[in-house]
Each structure stands twice: as structure tokens, then as C-alpha cells.
Length: 277
Image (cartoon, rainbow, N blue to C red; front, side, top):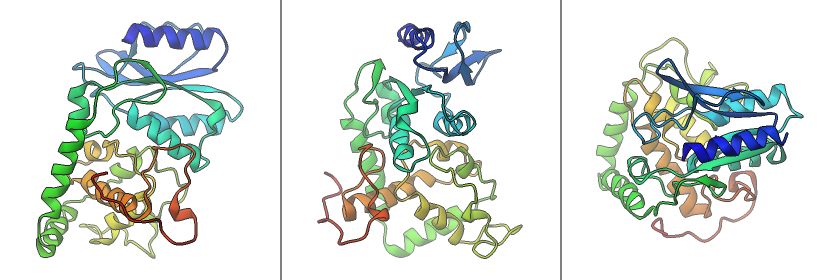
């Protein structure tokens, strides 16, 4: 699969269809983001699969925003999996990236990774390499995870999240790695809302503030979970907000690049849907 992707990237660069390609490179036994240019040797190009599962993951879309702001006239390519493409669609909608200035090179996730991530769409629409994996098992796993939490009574759920939030060391890792966090001024650093220098963080204000901001942005990539040094199940919290958005507004972030967020519109909400649909 990697040879197919490398050939695709080399062709895009050679034909001047893109000015650079944001992907991954392996050097000295480590995998890291890298902006490839025309004529550059792609021998170190990587798909992030240390264990053939794409486990070396970075918020490439977030890095792409930074580069695009510096070079607004350049067309840039980027490596995407299913969740990355959903992120791009969200960033196009939120005017953080210009869809005409981004060329996606998509790869499909293996079944093992799709199941581990509980991904409902483990492949991008712009698929350049890999095979589309049916998401049936991962969807069932996601529903099972959510059902286990929702099966608890309100007091137990409240106690669970209070205990989890109390572990937070306010490192901002969840925010900093999130490809959908791009605000130049962050509410999590506003003293009128959240006190500075205190641990544990303001419970539940700190994490619920971020969850509300992620309600129509989160694409369920799971990077926040991996970044949290305290192992707080942040993704489970954001899955819940995404579930509410789907039930109340029939909206799932990143699924349709031409769809506007219901939180940016006024009017009655659409008819509720079954969360399993």
C-alpha cells in the first residue's frame, strides 16, 4: 500500500498539482510529520504503521492549518484516513481551510485499527490505497461502550465523571492535539470562566466547556484519549455529545462536507432519530 501512496504523492509533486505534501516520515526509528517537496527523496515516507496498524498518529490537519495560514495561495496535499477526512470536511465548513487548496491522499484503515477505534467509517471517500473495511463490528463495539455508560443511573454516572475529572492535571494535551481546535483565544484559558493555577481543575466546568465546544466539531478521531496522561476517557464524553447532536439535529460532524452545523442556524430542530440509525 505504501508504494501506491508514494507514487501518488510523487506524481502530484512532479506535475505541480501541489506545492508540498504533509505526511509522515520515519527517521532514526521514529515517525513524525513531514512536509515533502518536489524532488525530495521519499524513501523515508511512512503511513505511521509501526505495527501494521497505523498506530503512530498525529493531527496532520492541525499542522496543515498552520502551514496554510503562512502560505494561503499554495495548494497542499495531505495524508488522510477516514477520521482525518471527516476533520477536513469540518474545517472546510468552519472556513479554516480552503477546499480548493487541499488535495487529499486517502488510505483505508485495517480492520484491527477500525475495531480499536470503534470507527463508523474507517476509510476516506478519496481512497488512494487500501481496501474499504465494513464498519459493522466497530459500530457494534461503539454502541456497546455507550450502552454500558448509559445503563448506569444518574448518580453513578455523575460520580464516575467527577472521579475522572478530578484526575485532570490541566496539561491542555486534549486541546493541543485536537485537529478541530483552532481558536486563537481559548475559553479554557479565560479566568472569568476557569480559574488558573488550581488543581484539580474546576469540576465539571473545564471539561464540559470543551465538550460543548466540540459538540458540532468532534470527528471521533480519538487523539485526545491517547494524549491524556491521566487516562480520562475523554472520547466517551465527546461520543455522548455527538450522539445528542445526531438524535436532536440529525447531524454528525464531518460526514457531509457541504452540511452546515445546526448550531450555526436558527429555527426548529429536525425530527429526532433513533441513535442506532
